[in-house]
Length: 508
Image 1 (spheres, helix red, strand yellow):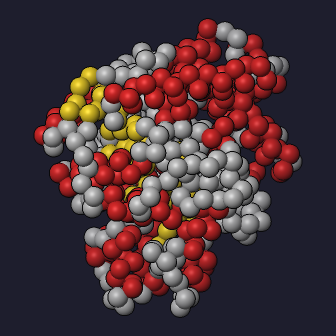
Image 2 (cartoon, rainbow, N blue to C red; image 1 turned 180 degrees about the vertical axis):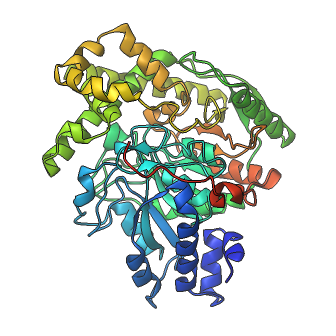
Image 3 (tube, rainbow, N blue to C red; image 1 turned 135 degrees about the vertical axis):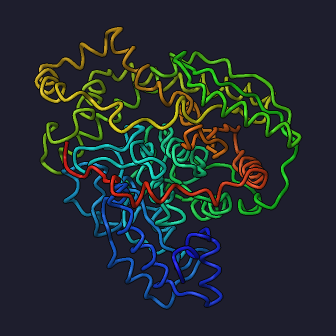
């Protein structure tokens, strides 16, 4: 098989070729490895290459499952593969091998996927860009001066660049939908508890985190949801699942929907005209397909929601940092300065503040439920602006020297009590203010690649559904995919192979 033939199929298509004996799993893996060697110097998407593991799996004659023999990459965060480290984007954890497979990895292996590496992520998945001291900068295949988003930025870059047709991802505040929007991919965040976490993680971020994938086709995401979404007796939630396979949704026509849309940022921060245009264009497309689309938004205090999200987020970051230091013997100074700042703010959160913030998540859930009594879906931008330039939100170099001693003096506690901190929270969410609502409420949401900017950058649109609406979201996504196909839109090879394309891999 030639590479162009490999690239022309999604994961289901490749699995069908293998099942018919038209190509061998080992051939596909070598194509994936060759493509990785060819383009990864430009995008820095793979943090750990596990090629011998991949060759061992591809060489087995007993691979079974719906994706038997398809090359696959997992995220280097909470997707443990026994015997290999899960670095979570950090230096200290690179030397700590996992003792067992995570539940998602076990299910991917049972589905016959050939895992041959791990993809880059920001430290502990805390940012909407993928730039770290340990692994350097991960770049967007559409424009290597731009970010592929985060925290599943490496996964998005690898899929968009054609290394694999689908890759493992996860989403605790937008980390599937943000990279999907940045790189022209489809990304579905399932509802709370539909995909169990474990065994090492039970209920991360009070259930805000969902495992999942990034794909080029809707049907690959649907089939992956069937694989990942089986119940787990040890999971903290018993959730409602579709009575029909999610893959059926791709062929099942969607009913006419009532969709409310907004392109006003919840925190009141600016929204780029391209993001506004993306939503208005999507609304026009939906109307042409027979849906009712009108301006509407849930009745929610977006600024307070942002603060309540960041209260939990920073406390979780502090816990992750403390556990990593305990496990490895590292100190806080061994981690990125951004991680140190977030953790310092998290340590300043009292138990009362944490529980009160998390309790208010229920208020937002009820407000969104009221919205869904009238509207089937909420349509918003996935991003408030086109993909950020590399380094655009990087902590200034002077801060790397000044902040650590201040943090050791306890400035994090002082800072978290000031108006300055509230302004910092707002600024931190300014580029990605629309995605946290679905995580807080535990509702499913997806980013669909409906729009490209005037200078050729992808900019997806987000749909947020109500409880148990994954099937409905997949139905609509399949309808949009048919009406405005994106599968054959590829990043320019000049970005990936040109002399000027070079990823920053050295520590900063």
